[in-house]
Image (tube, rainbow, N blue to C red; front, side, top):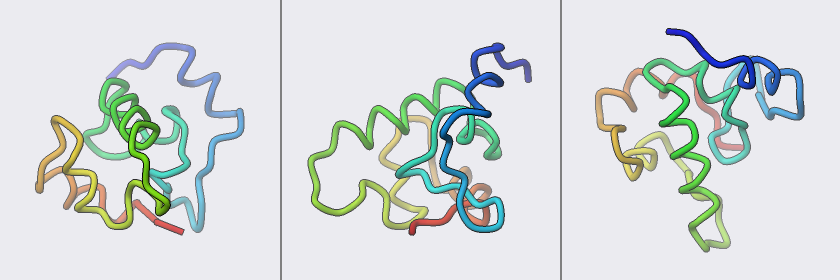
Length: 88
């Protein structure tokens, strides 16, 4: 997979990769999210758009299965990315 230079440039910005390299989908930037298995730039942007669009007091994603709300992310993808996620 080839990523645009902007994704690599963003990796050195204020991306929130938390706890032993695990990624918090409630805070991570696109450059961090694309490091997850089967998550490319479009899905990363969809995750960010979804979490910004929900109007909850709690974070948009409280467990891995919550990512199934994103178009193109199903149970198999959630199973693959689950070990790489944290929700703190």
